[in-house]
Length: 144
Image 1 (cartoon, rainbow, N blue to C red):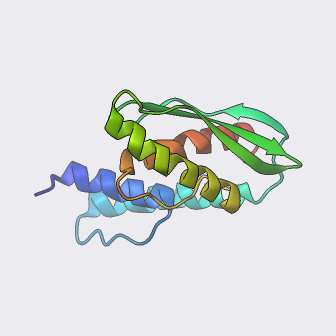
Image 2 (cartoon, helix red, strand yellow):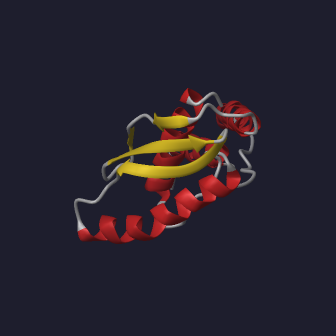
């Protein structure tokens, strides 16, 4: 059984990474959180289409339950050219295994989408969420 706060956090996570619609039911607090986070995510997607400033931009260090995630976005010719993950949970074998698989996918999806709005990777939920948040802060620094 989920607590109400958990459902709100899950709803916000889904909205922030743009993987689909979440039915929030009659809970007005959850609905409000979903709508406000969806608007923010849509704004990031819209502004990512704008020309970015070339350079290297470091995102905010985001807590991912098992450790922190911090990325650096490389913008070249006004487009997201690469994302380098500077920090990620890797202090145990399980985290190393999960992130060794998930991070390359997240990077490729972000470059392909030219945005921080990428799908969540099942099994790497915390890393995926922290990755998208850190990348979004880096892209804002680049003018998104």
